[in-house]
Length: 455
Image 1 (cartoon, rainbow, N blue to C red):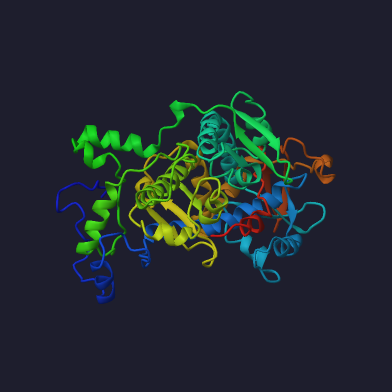
Image 2: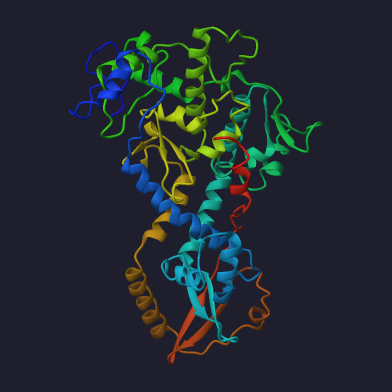
């Protein structure tokens, strides 16, 4: 349950009645400040979300390989070498066997002329790609606003183009956003090359005061109007939702109550001219970093982003060096999941935006991306039943023999409107693929780029 801290005693009621360890009690009894070191408390709802997304990421890379071909098909024999080149961790002949686990996404068939096995995307997968493409273009005006707010949060009003490009999917930006967003709106953005380095930067033309309103401020206003909380209590507070099993002691409760009332500067406010040497200024800057990461997550499509991508904006937004330890101090606001890539990937969730592993306020782009995850998680047994039903319908409706089109044999497919039949065990099955889509490119250099910054 999402709660605001106030003067009431039961606002931070612990979820567990078991006492804290003796060492933790001794540590917190010496001070009423939030401890710098805290143990991680797992939230299985977010971890299960990442385990499902791990499969989706591999499927997306295989989709990218197939869509990069002129005919949108690929021989099965080539998947092993291509998978090893991408570093997907498959052994010999494992990549092809991996495709069989997702029959709702990949369709394996025998080429009518070459008589070897090929792979292509199913109609359901093509439909999902088309829906995601339409949702991406429909929310493009919102993506422009998100990019404006993102650049406004930087100290100098500029961000490296490469850092934004790596995180373009999280912010709902198209692959060609440099041309379709930045250069298309010269009244908002300016693109220039740095003199001292070979880097391009995105600069905000003019700061809009109407955009300098954080998402948490709107939440505070809603809570104040709907629940009638004291204005002083919610003025600088954050929504807190501790994970199940998180133990809250007496001194920790006091520390969080005090921290909620500490004022801070807005992430959109320029603090370059302030004296930051005092203890009060350090406290404000620490809470400002929490507000900055909170706003950064609020600007994403799925209210989550990897820790490595946040590290790209660390210098530009005055974020602390040890981001992981810093986020673990505030487990009631953020959740850091290490699942999804054998502990090598850290994904930061905004806890208040999720309930039971689902986004509370989903958008069309989020729903379109989730449909791919639904196809991945569908069982192969159901796919077998669907194929039998389709084959039965085709056998009853198709009586004539349809020859293979010569232009398909030459791999000269432009509109992906191929129709042909393949003979399997004396039975002929028809295939028809009609779709107009653009491949969702997966950048192979993302993992290498993310290691450049300190986490």
